[in-house]
Image 1: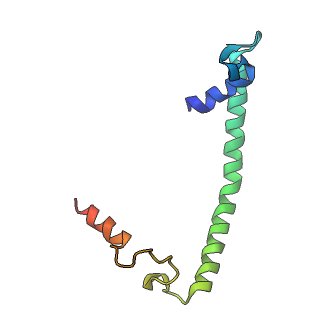
Image 2: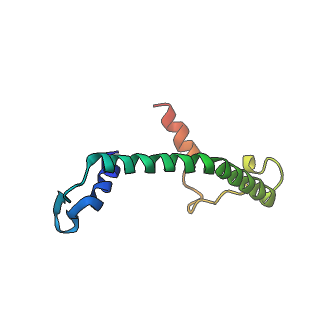
Image 3: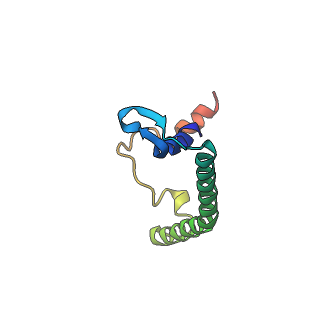
Length: 102
C-alpha cells in the first residue's frame, strides 16, 4: 500500500509537518524499504500467532452467549437477537432476499 509505505518516509524527512518533504542527507531508500519489510513480516507473524486465539475467543463467546440466551435452536426462533427499533419495518433478511432476485 503506497500510503502505508509513504508513512515511513516521514521519519527521514526534514520537516514534513511544515511541508518540507525533502529527505535528510544520507537517507537511503533501501533503509526505508528494509524497515517497511521488517514491519510487514512482524505484522504477519503476529497475525499468524493471534488468529487461533481469535477463533478460540469467538467460539467460547458464542457458546457462552448461546448457553445464556436459551436452548438449542433459540437463534432459529429469533431469540437472542437485538429487536429492531420499529417492529413493523421489513426485516433485514427479507430485504436481502428481495435484492437477490434482481
